[in-house]
Image (cartoon, rainbow, N blue to C red):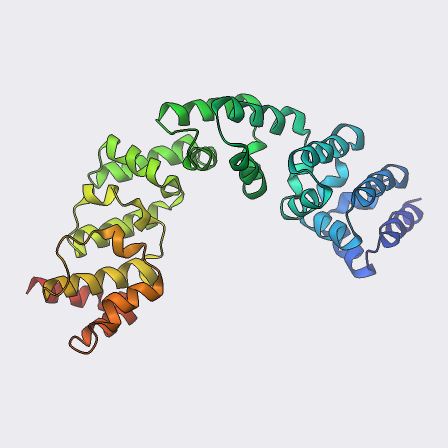
Length: 318
């Protein structure tokens, strides 16, 4: 009956080190587990345990993605773990990956990861970068082989060099955006005056620019163009500004530098990217600490950029 089946499957998990609370939580999150047959579930747990997963590892993996227990042992779990072991060279590395991304053993990697990696190698992507993609963004390599082939072709045709680091990064970014989302972001950048060539240049320099939300793109461009007076096209050459927090990084730095430029105490040819990419310590030493005695305003601007942005813009134009 149902009660005896529940008792048996609960006992199975407890035998693998799950506490009563962990089992209850697991069953509430994944009700299908209550109906698992012991003779089907046990070999899966046996295999994962023999592969090197500890009780703690299994608890984390199943808590994050209990649907692993629905996958075929022979057609999914075993081949997936063996494929990952072949790529990462040891079981420990596989376990680390699976704990972070349990979905990597939820599907037959022979239909995704294997052909996708072969394709990247065919294009000339370095093995170290492929493995970095597998460890950091495995979802990209889990895309079906046909769709992945189209994505790689699109990125290649944009002019990305397979030998450079941004090739893999661009594939990851592009794969995560629907066609509609891509077009909305492209149209927004065009609205701010970027040409298609400038958009492509920015994307090639910093693929993650397309991850920025439309709201953030709008806010950054509005601040840099309308409040700070930067040329929209020039910003396309420095897409890094889209990656930092506007309020906590870009805005205070721009306000301080613009103020110092108005006082003629820093070089006029200072580029946007040169001070945006500086470390916190270097920026403070070069633009805040150096001038705070003669111009105490820099401390206020750097510490309360958001509150002072509008007031400062009026001060500059007056």
